[in-house]
Image (cartoon, rainbow, N blue to C red; front, side, top):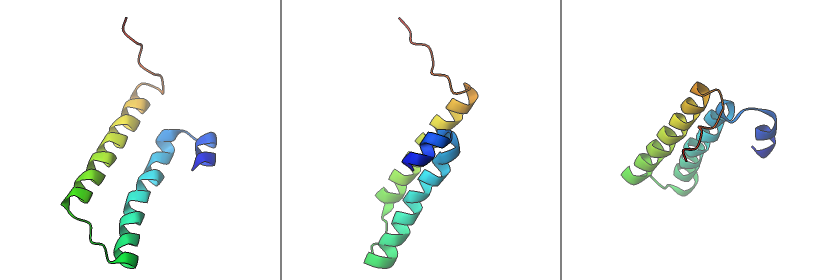
Length: 70
């Protein structure tokens, strides 16, 4: 992922980064028989929503950071 961030925009790579949530949950279920509980699903939804909101905001602003208020 570090090399990918060097060559592409973060907004293009974030969907692949979010797949880690799904793969780690699936691996935990298959290998360790660990069933995700409600807090796991809620936390995943919060992480996904926050990352999606940040990526959407970045694409709307053209990748520019907002100006700091003094």
